[in-house]
Image (cartoon, rainbow, N blue to C red; front, side):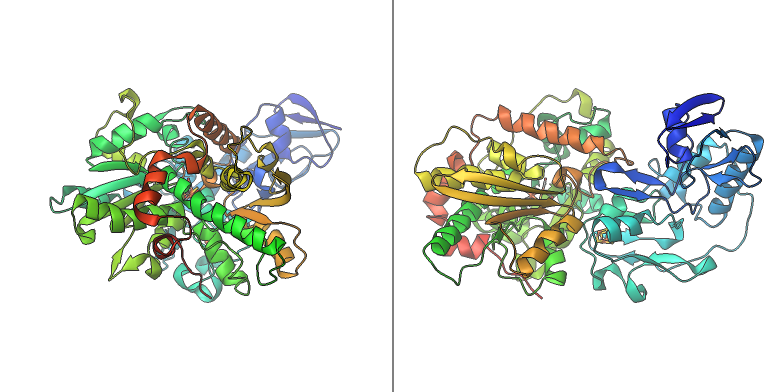
Amino acid sequence: LVNVTVDDIKVQVPEGTTILAAAKSAGVNIPTLCYLNLADFGCVNKTASCRVCVVEVEGRRNLAPSCATPVNEGMIVKTNTIKALNSRKIVLELLLSDHPKDCLVCQKSGECELQDLAHEFGIKEIAYEGKESTYRKDISKSIIRDMDKCIMCRRCETMCNEVQTVGALSGVNRGFDAVVAPAMEMDLNDSVCTYCGQCVAVCPTGALVERDATWDVLSALADPTKTVIVQTAPAVRVALGEEFGYAPGTSVTGKMVSSLRKLGFDRVFDTDFAADLTIMEEASELLDRLTRHLNGDTSVKLPILTSCCPAWVKFFEHNFNDLLDVPSTAKSPMQMFSAVAKNVFAKELNVDRKDLIVVSVMPCLAKKYEAGREEFSKDGDFDTDIVLSTRELARLIKQANINFNILKDEEFDNPLGESTGAGVIFGRTGGVIEAALRTAADWYTGKSLENIDYEAVRGFEGVRSADVKVGDLDLKIGIAHGLGEARKLLEEVREGKSMYHAIEIMACKGGCIGGGGQPYHHGNTSILRKRTEAIKIEDESKAIRKSHENPYIKKLYNEYFKEPMSHQAHELLHTKYFK
Ligand code: HC0
Ligand code: SF4
């Protein structure tokens, strides 16, 4: 340990600790902008590029960036001298001088870390007027890049390259023209970007934001010729409350349903229902591949990979396109829901599929891209019409003057609103494979098993391995969350070294609860664990916790699909992957 004094407070910290961390342990919070410590992601962005965190160190002439300067024995640090404060203010003024002054109409307004600091430092005028750098806006289906608002903190780059290992973003050009961009400054649309949205989740300004679709929803709701239905993803209900002042980890399912009804949706349905439907197909596929494999069929590919995360799907289409026959062919719950809504439910309602608008509320930005994939459309009409993120839903509720906090809990509509605990746990890492195991184990043993808590697949480790007994089968299950972690398991599969029978992959840390469309965590990743806890409580509170026991799922198979992997099921519930 070394002894350090920060603003007259003495602390002992391990050798190698940064001044920033030492100050924190002394209870002194030094402001930062580019710095980001995502402890649960195994990643720290300390490019020391913004210089907001500078401090005075006794005996040194120059100010030191506290995020990147390690302490040493006897160091005396002052974080609030006039020299440090002045330098911090000048840094902010310089950043603002080359920043658009459209804060009033910026999508990030109110949640922008640069705006917060300018406010904190009492900056009331732009000190250095002059030419601002300008760059074209890049608008993809999921994300808008507005590099005029980029402050070159490089958080997005660290996230995309180090955590996700996608490598879609890097700093290009120099000086005034420097921006963060895909290779050869192409648009995201033409790049290897997976639309996971994790760069958006960590961008401190409005340089990276989701493509907002709230107005599309309002227009659809106002159109009397349309029937507008909505589905909500498992992870939305355990995070939406944060936008209305609830503590992280508060589940607001009933209020969410009630607010959607107040917004004017004709039916409020649940993606969790479709998650149960996904399990019917995916568990059948798993058992089918396993039993064929055990019977010596060498054409069978194992492990089977889950396929419901669209960022993950795009990632393997780009990086592992020699393995396209390995993942399950089951569509994601969102797309299964929409296929059933447009092809089965529309007929029940007696409306043309073009007049049925399906809105999805998702914790994810890649879902916007997924909805727009050609294979999920028929004669130009997409199965999912509009995708909103959790943040956008909160915006809509606020715009509609709905007092969320006093709403009474309401229930989803049926038939596409009933779900089991297995559907709920899709929202967290390990949940899809646990849900599949609950059903596969019952089917394989021919019994209704009582123990359905597969503790071995739960947890927060980036890559997990679990041994699971299903009847007389000893299954080895792999789980990865975060694309960098997924890459490790995929490389083993490619090399023929994978020891797994089945692998679940989710692109975001924590699974969907940590999606790029969720309320901003501003680096406090303990929020993700609290959301996971809320999912657990929802699961345990459900009367039915196995997908195949969902009465509405049974009815759908009796009346329409007949059995999993039937001809009808293949037509509506399965998909293909492309190079
Ligand atoms: Fe997910 Fe899903 S679990 S991807 O994270 O499978 O977005 O929440 O909706 O589709 O159900 C997201 C969440 C979903 C889908 C489900 C899956
Ligand atoms: Fe990289 Fe994901 Fe951002 Fe695309 S959305 S640039 S893959 S972090």
